[in-house]
Image 1: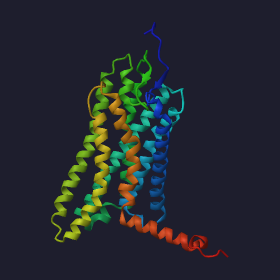
Image 2 (image 1 turned 120 degrees about the vertical axis):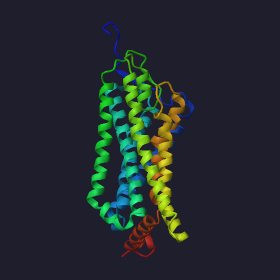
Image 3 (image 1 turned 60 degrees about the horizontal axis):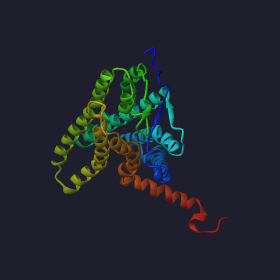
Image 4 (image 1 turned 180 degrees about the vertical axis):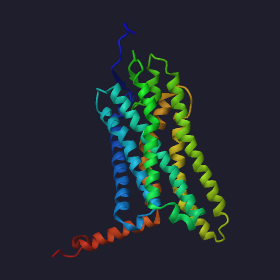
Length: 319
């Protein structure tokens, strides 16, 4: 390698082939990002401020909202800057840092979705033991384990990528530093890292999805034994939102990452990855929380208190 120039910077191609839609795409993604951050911050604020939401289910929802906000923030601000910039370069250190946080935070989010499925299983199948099994300290420990496992699982492949040689070309056909487009540019042998990425994808995605499926099989079996139809409907309604988020998140991730090799259609991957990084974090607050009856009650109660405290909001003359 002594006679080969080593690449120090990479160019993110992003959506630069759509010159005529750059401004429109920037405005659309910016709007979605702002709404995503505000929506997830609203969930976190409501959960912290109102005692009616101080339960394991809303504690996990709060952590899921935090993860969604962090995952999209690792990608979208840089994507927005690149849409308006002609200089779209990123150093290898910046690239690997973005990749590390994107995949580790994504792994944590999948683990939290798994814990949420377990919480629903205990609530429906073991209601008499729910308070003991899902106590406050247990919930905190479960979330801490999700964080630790999520970060530790991505450290090894990230460190191995720092040892790769890049001798050109240096154009990453993506809007963020995804693993497959980066490995495709390496002059080194990347088969070991590809296999590791594939194995970790199987472990973090398919293994957690299997645990969620098992939880819901047990939940369905328990719900079918509930004598009243209203009871069955209430039990299913508490799980429907979580299942919708699982389908959205896992569907796009499995399509992109749970496939061996690095020679996939990058254009299709970019579109599907946009679902994971932008659309799903935007939809999740509405699917998981804002349609929830107890959350609606909390929002209505807070709105009423604000109106009662503000004479101008009620149309009454301020003193």
